[in-house]
Length: 84
Image (cartoon, rainbow, N blue to C red; front, side, top):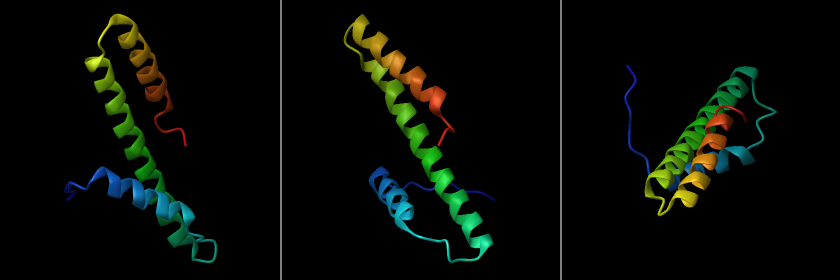
């Protein structure tokens, strides 16, 4: 029973950055696995949000050159999804 919640983007970014600073090497393997899973999911979510922003840049482009540049950036970001 998964439910979605709205969390401000700034808070998600801060949580993600904070988790990167923690040293969990002394914890149990199960906790480490959970930690890496959560960090990966947060990073994946951040990539998807950046991809959405890149797409909106295509839509808001003021001329064809800007649209082409935005499209190239979008395609590059889309190719990077999941690569951490």
